[in-house]
Length: 311
Image 1 (tube, helix red, strand yellow):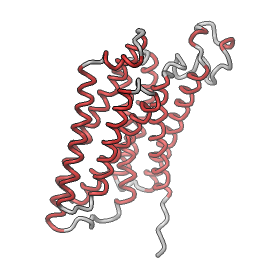
Image 2: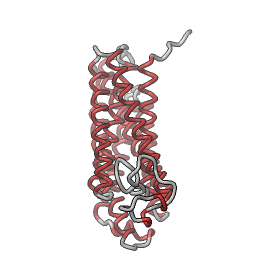
Image 3: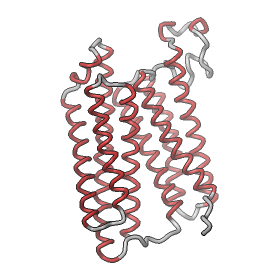
Image 4: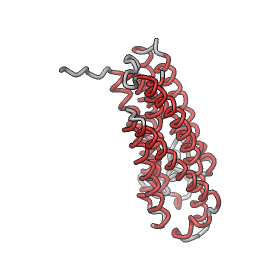
């Protein structure tokens, strides 16, 4: 049986979504490596569109002590990737207009993602202007997550919008899907809040490190905010486990994605433990943020699938 080829929009939507996830990973690397101010101005880097080759090439308004080539290029590559994602989302929106203008769930979702990516670029400039203030970094991350969720929605609709919901049959299947829709929506909300708390925790850790606190003692200075972040992680884990058991009891076709959500929630907590007991290992920080975005993505796919089956 011959498989249907992917349409141009489906290919573009997949590439755009995957690249946006990669950008979030790189953003985590920037954060973990302390490269957020590797370029101390925005949108330029040390006053130039192309970073200077050495401290001797810096304009007079910049302190040579600010120059660190590794941090500078890490941040600059992050910015270049952000611009690339912006153009990919623009191309996706144009393709949606050309091929799916009569499907508002695809068209307006991609347009919303494009508008938000412009706002995200502006927020990136505010992050630098406010010297990595925790509240603006949190806003920057949340908007990035919302953008990738919108892209996931449009991609899902592009692959399933023309098909009918046939996997959930009968009253029991419809009831399972409806319950899973509500549960997934709650998990998405709680995970978003937890991610916001996580960014705040990281901001407090950075403040402690800048004040000279040892890396292995920095997390202890955060206090209640860190406990809230951890507690919400367990709320997500318990919610994912309960949903999985409930779907198993009803033999729902959604069980596979529920297991994915549960596995990612477990891995996320495991990396959090590694961070707490391994002096905030940078690699664990990058993985922790990347898993958070993947967890939200899996929850979103579960919500979309259950929503379609409950119709």
